[in-house]
Image (cartoon, rainbow, N blue to C red):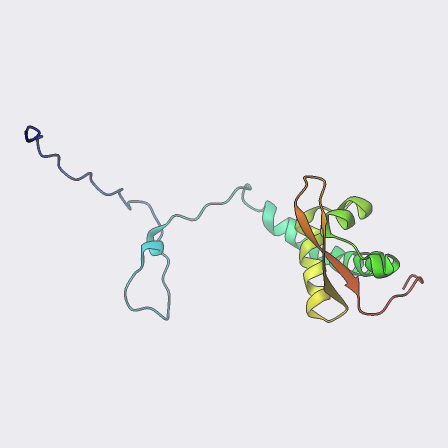
Length: 136
């Protein structure tokens, strides 16, 4: 049996420099972790996220009511997030947190049923704890 020729030793690559990285600290940990030196990444220009959050906070109660009324009107058939987003013309980043709050408040629940989204993925069917046809 022949042995392969000795390959030249390669030195280990240098770790990336942390120069210019703001180190995040955790009060509960005495030693840094792998994630402490990761740079913060923002997709939006400065100031835009804050403005969007302020506007969303103003709209949240109305969105919450619209989503609850929509699910109530669907009765036992219920609604998936995908159906609600399309019907109410609310983007997922707005719809999902409001639907989650409705579930946490006990006003809607996961029926255990699943329906396919437009992309063919199974989605939870949400049903109101109390059905009503009237608008609030």
